[in-house]
Image (cartoon, rainbow, N blue to C red; front, side, top):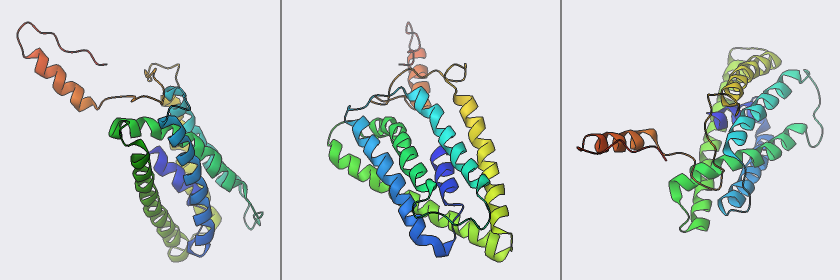
Length: 212
């Protein structure tokens, strides 16, 4: 969900005619998360997952806020700030991908799996960009909403959701219990844990296995 919200926030300010700008934007984000994903998966970077997952919704909120404060008719510079947002925040998102990647793939054939994982993310990301551009087309071209109104309303909704996510993930609250880093698998699927616990509980003389 956080990845979907971030890419949506990045693309909301663009329409179909801006496809070249969207391509540059998505490429910057892909470069960012690919670099830190590889570094983290190869154990060159180690960052506590609880802080990364807290910071990610803050990157979404910052991007949405940047959309809201953009003035109507403002001419963007040759390299708008949103490009640097995409690159820098992509670095942060890549750290979060590492834990999911290691959970799915392990460390055998790491380079090939990294390549395949990034291709999969990129394809899903491009599909999401198409959906966002279609929504913008429908709102601005078909429903005749002013472009700035569409941008601010949609960005405000994303801002509210991302702030709530950040609050829920704040590491010092009881809502968050992760203590591991992005260089190791973070969590097992809860269904697997429930199955194993139930399986052992049904055997006489055995206690339910504790979650690792």
